[in-house]
Image (tube, rainbow, N blue to C red; front, side, top):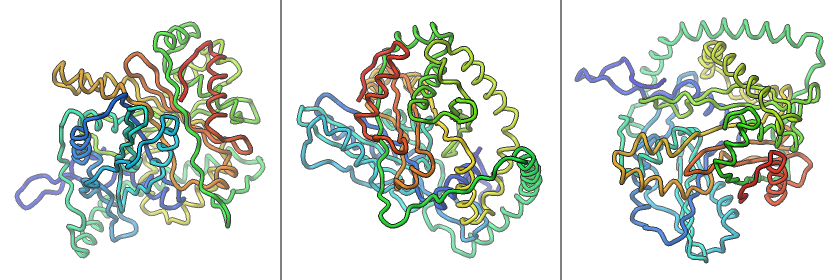
Length: 470
């Protein structure tokens, strides 16, 4: 966890450690090697004209949290990069012309694809769209390399409350090249024991992997990048809102919790999207588990638990799925240290090798369904708001949250077709509603929002649930 660097300034004050956490270094290196960029997108819809001064304050405050930074590379190819301060763009993108309400989804897609870069900037941008029915939409798009979903929830509430934080990041290019080389070389040398232990762990894991795949047919890596004529794709995304009482009643009837029901819905949608494993018919879920704590400055403070769920039973009984998820979380806790140790090798892995590793992983793995649950966003407001008035104000603002999703920029159709497509389900709770965003692409299928909405409605009905689907 990034907190403080043991090195001290000349006045004896402990300097903040502005090096990227290992997981953030790995994410940055991986995206640079493979091309597509992961972003997070939020859209609010207000059923009236909005206070533009308030939006401008919100925009300014966002630059004084974990979004107020970007990545500066080390001059050494094997050293960890660093965070430097960057308050973001000074202006808000306000659309000149109003658009009909039924074009809101198209506008959101357009905003999601405007350039974002955690190194060169902008790392995030805010846009406003007046709608012809008198309502107003606000869009926030940001790099996943700057922050994860749970961290973003706290950052948004901070910005709405006017809370600003100074993490002590230096200005860009504040170190001379010579100083940067010397400092980074010294700190890399200090990390040598951890790197040595990572090499030992990697060797052990490689031996286990060779034993596991012995006698199995070899997988031929796929080419992750399209050639001439390969077009960019905006993966279809929809949002579902279900009444919380209905959701809880159905979860109880199926022997599940709220989160298990979301996982069951993901598994069933995965089945309908052709993501069942050939050998046993299960759907592989990748569950994002937040590790964020007070004072944590990592961009991505999370780990992933992998669980296989039989989708044929989830609409009538979720007890097996609940037990499988519980076991997967136990396994994650038991193996986490070894997985984290391997991250020490990331700065020493060449870009070509990272690209090759991605190709091999895609070729040999089952197409997963990524699931993330932000929990009760209202509880975030409760913890951060200082007064009842503040709670009411911020809760009302968050209650107009229309969409939260993780999506990808610069993703190519050929990449999606060759890697088995994509499916992400994100859920959250706010003001008596369960919100669910589904982002999905199925190779060879009709990949449109209307088709995805129809599939979602049919799947909800299988769970005896109904909801509003946008």
